Image (cartoon, rainbow, N blue to C red; front, side, top):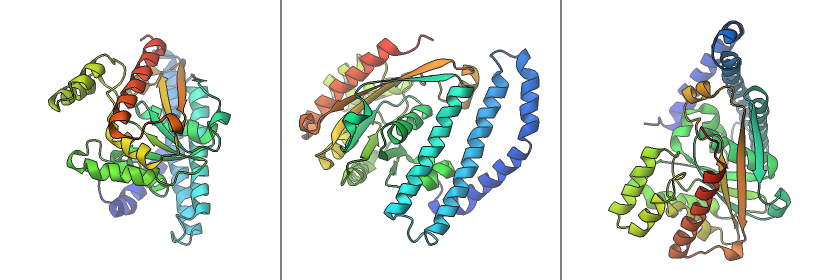
Length: 336
């Protein structure tokens, strides 16, 4: 269960700050040890690459927390923290954080990026509702990084509330127009859709709402459970279509419907990607090093005039596009 915000601010964030500081003091010794044993273990310098990337993330976490504290002071002890100027500064901090992660992923992990679809100029001066597949924690960073640094966007993101265990994510994203929701809202689903509609209201020329319609990372077990849930709910046609999609979970249309009906002048964007689906846990990252892999992304844009706004039309349209995403992943995903 996620602790209340005041406890996360007063206890978890300071405690993590102290632990990271202590760990970084001894980091040079760990890195030297990793360099010494790397030639004797599988993978090219796997222990050294792994520890360096973990240490880098810890350093970035520390730097972001310090910057956020400084921004809080600069905003009059938080009184102006939601002002337009403060929001721009927080987005700039996000851009820097994700840009550094991309640089080091290329340099240390051997990741390459290939992007297909319309050029960024085609999205200029248009509000967007972005719907992306969800295959692991890395893809969330990738999609947001692309919007911030490649497409010059200020994203509003719908995220799982469990991500607030990370103090930097917790503080930074709660200061910006984002929504943390329960992975399985259940009876609170109507309230969740209301929050998403509020988030999608008033998107301007460089805003984009980011939503992951699957509601969770893709796994085989989750796919089976999602199909069974559709059948129990009497959605036989949707269940049959979901069974034919083997690379994605069936989309949940509730949040998408709320977003599209609130942002009637926004273009819709679908994002498929592959190359990161095998990295879900820290153990997966260890086993996958060096990655030496290409992460491929494909973006599709649907003009606002071609986006349905009625509930039944959105459901049919969303499933059709998700079948397109599934087919693209099937062609381009790396062979294990």
